[in-house]
Amino acid sequence: MTNTPVVVIGGGAAGMMAALAARQTGAQVTLVEPNEKLGRKLYITGKGRCNLTNNTTPQGVLDHVPRNGRFLYSAVTRFPPAAVMAYFEELGVPLKTERGGRVFPCSDRAADVIDALFFALKRQGVALLRGRAEHLLLENGRAVGVMVGGEPLPAGAVVIATGGLSYPATGSTGDGYWLAEEAGHTIVSPRPSLVPLEEKGDTCAQMQGLSLKNVTLTLKNQKNKAVFKEQGEM
Image (cartoon, rainbow, N blue to C red; front, side, top):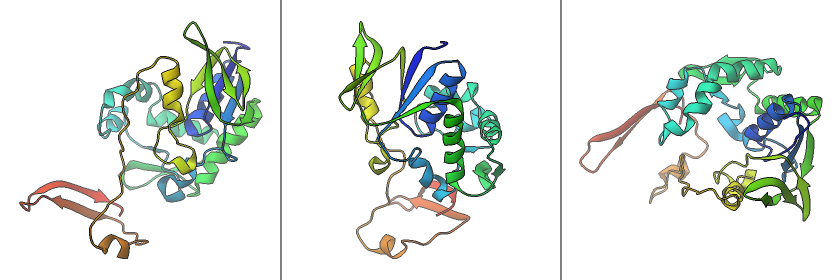
């Protein structure tokens, strides 16, 4: 892929890491991101501390995927949690493992993870283009570029790393779905993995801002039978 222009759409964790990987092959890489700052969703992960992986085996990850874990098998086995940890420590982010195998930067600052990726992009010479990818440029079903701000951006390869629909305020607005559809892919209707807890009364509202550790939550059905139980933070 030496000197092949690569355009990566999306400046989150996946996009930044994809841009760095493409650059290591010798490609000319442009990262397209509409937000002023890269990695906006990373700032809020792990309550601002960035729980960037779990210190477990690939199978340990797949066992905790709620739906269709097989889809992640190739990615998780080729780039397992141990490799993720080594990757960020090589970028200058010391890590620690906490209860439940959760891995955080020793500084407890998500910003340190973002900065490490951002400065790696600068060192490697990845070009950053502020703007939104509006359409793919296609020839015979193959992506040969992207329209950004009404201007064509040619490419030998295009990587869509826009995230899903999980948090529109951070840029996850679902753009990647219709871009992939333009290229002929079939999109499975997305479903939420994390959802808000709602109730008819005001108990949840009264607990807003309360943070608890080592809590066991038991969910019971109308017959008072426990149908779900898990321990963690609340």
